[in-house]
Image (cartoon, rainbow, N blue to C red; front, top):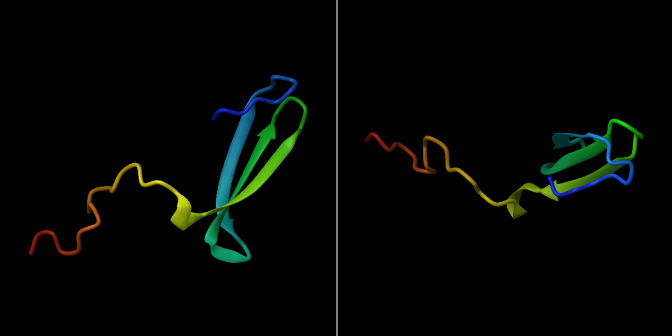
Length: 63
């Protein structure tokens, strides 16, 4: 994570589905030293795919 708190404390990030929209991820980053908290909502369809996983996006690959 390319983010630094002015106090240079350790950062903790967590994410979950946004309660108001299932197409959004709610991301919260908090500095454990001073309590500074950042929040952002990210659209799932705007994210980059890093790994297709075992299915590779193919349905019924064994058929």
